[in-house]
Length: 162
Image (cartoon, rainbow, N blue to C red):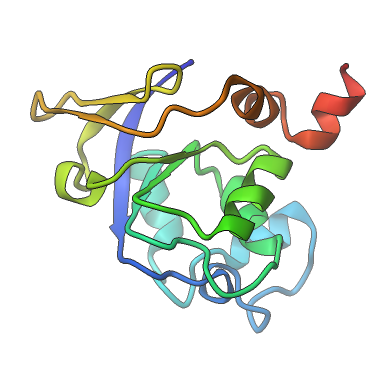
């Protein structure tokens, strides 16, 4: 599977799940309610930036601190097409996979991708090409069964269709 889109923002290390979708901003657990709450404590301009691209880039340990599934759901329902981080907190990784949020680990991605850059991401090979600069980088190759879960809409959808 190949994703081609622009990076709308690069976020720092250790963005916690509480900051991704803090309870004080969640007025409803509907997809729309979670989407409205996304990233307000980290980046109040998050939703406007999504108009410039659908790839979100982050540093290390993205989604740390709690097991709240809201964080991954908020990003998914906001319209993030692909989230690339240098590393993910394990529980965030699991939650994102289970709900069908397309995520990808790539060491040093924050040094290679910048807002406005157009990326070509081959999830099968793990190769990311920055179309804007011509540089390439190798990310972690995702096992096919995890890619299947994420691209089919999550774990429940995968089980329904099998």
